Length: 202
Image 1 (tube, rainbow, N blue to C red):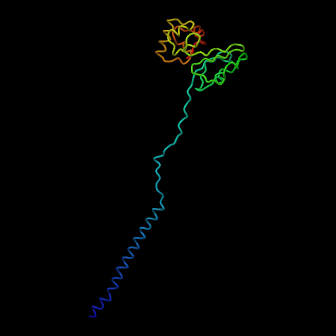
Image 2: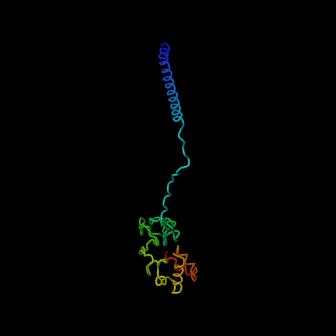
């Protein structure tokens, strides 16, 4: 009987020891988890440097260009390359401005100029020339890039043979970039070119 009483008194201690062990184990687990979470918060997330995207501004579009033949009472007559949308004032400025004997009031400086146009600045007291249509017949400019054989033959010094050579050159090489390119056509020399320079355009 005494042995049984000793056993009963010992059971609460044993139970207390097991419970304490469980509490200690749970506390250790909680500490371990807490340390892990703290370390995770303290470490910065890795930053990838592999996917670096370069942002660039696209280049501005280049404005189109046109050829305008400026002649008459200007300081430097000739063929000039202007930006599309240019006006008569721009063409005259490219040609060095008005000559001393020019009649500026005879032309509209604000008018836009077209590709292949011939701008003639009249001399003081001279009537302004009628607008010439590029590639037109006699009385206008002959467009070397669009004229047929008949229109080419209206140019001084250009007969059927040279007209055919101009058409053949154009077929093989494409458009003329300037009237002076006629020198590349067999049979056309400086004298012929000078005679048609002010009567042709491209």
